[in-house]
Length: 278
Image (cartoon, rainbow, N blue to C red; front, side):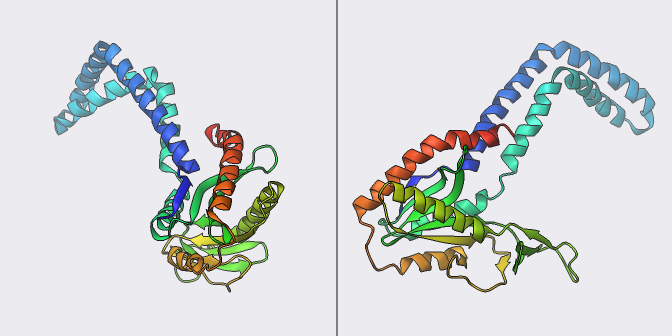
């Protein structure tokens, strides 16, 4: 199994923090309900009576609806702020864009590659004040792979301004096509930044940018570019398994991993803060 130095991803960190906040808010709401139990019961009985009379012909619907209407009126007033915060937190928990794809790649690398490979997930390196985040950095025997993952459905074609995207749910004549950022450019940029960073620390190794499409309903329709290949998970595993040389010794690998881990700790707090405040 490949070694994993940094396992937790950015979105996993955000979700864990959001879950803690959610648990706190739910406890606050439960406490408010308990402290205002009499008022909740009073308003529920009042609205049960009103709607019960108004909807007598569909008994007992009026009574049931009235009970919940009375409670809701009180809770909207008492728990307004907590409920608003809870909605925002639930969005952070549920809308974890890209997490599924990143997990697929991380799991495949860890379980299908031998232990001379070493993986760092969601690595933050210097790039201005806040840094820039790389989905995966895989250190092999001869090469370091700078990986950008995309877990999007649809067909993708080359375009002068990025990738031309045809969503998977489009049928017949497509009117929903749009141009999205080119992940190859992003991966190449990250690889160049990573190369400069390591050379500052006296590490001169080959760094290859790669894009991995993880969604089975996502398909690249353009030509392959050896500068930054676009692969699926299984072909990527086969791609890196072909390494024969051992220019990166275990000591060099571990030194590089330590350098990158230390830098990640230095820049990740600032980088993560932009997500936490959104």
